[in-house]
Image 1: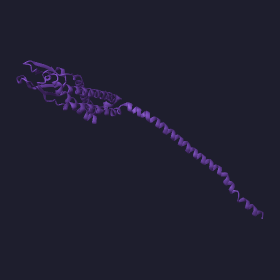
Image 2 (image 1 turned 90 degrees about the vertical axis):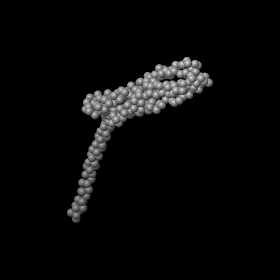
Image 3 (image 1 turned 30 degrees about the vertical axis):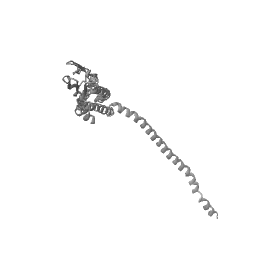
Image 4 (image 1 turned 180 degrees about the horizontal axis):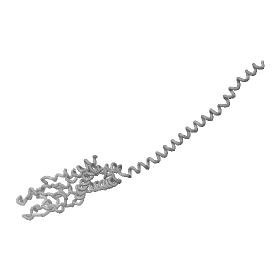
Length: 265
């Protein structure tokens, strides 16, 4: 039930916080010649984070000539893979929810439904682990590439001590950090659901029967042993009573002696 409720929600948060991101930073270049300065240089970037395609122009502080600068890095592969896994996990979770609620009989028919569900759950658990780890590394690269200090090093004007270059504001990465957190939460959720799905398959029931057979054989052999002991005890008691029988008869013949003695008198 937890899987049905939380899996779609966690998947939505994962791909929404990553796929819907757009951010930027602002820089300023204060040249010696104030007319060449630019105190508001905006650099915008967004999903899928092909940063090498993000370009902007900055003053060179050498007349009216301007420099075209591009960011460094490309994290599109890890970001797109992460979002793709999240979208397909969301769609499968919705489909599984419909099956669990409205087609429970067909789901359990011939053990095919639980078996497919088990395999898909294992696959998605692995994909969430790989996708979240790859995107965490990609996000780290994005943070480095969009660090204002690193971007300022790409400008020729900032390499001259007479010019003043500074960052006005840095990009906000809170939503991207949230996407990584939800990625690993999805992995924990799907991996934890593997055991519950496995219990629905025929593999679990067959293993339970295999483990219960030796116990039943042991208990049956124990009962047979107890029956033999009881029968042995009853037969031995019977033999003891039989062996005591003649001694009681002999004891009963002793009064005959005194009787014959009185007759003689």
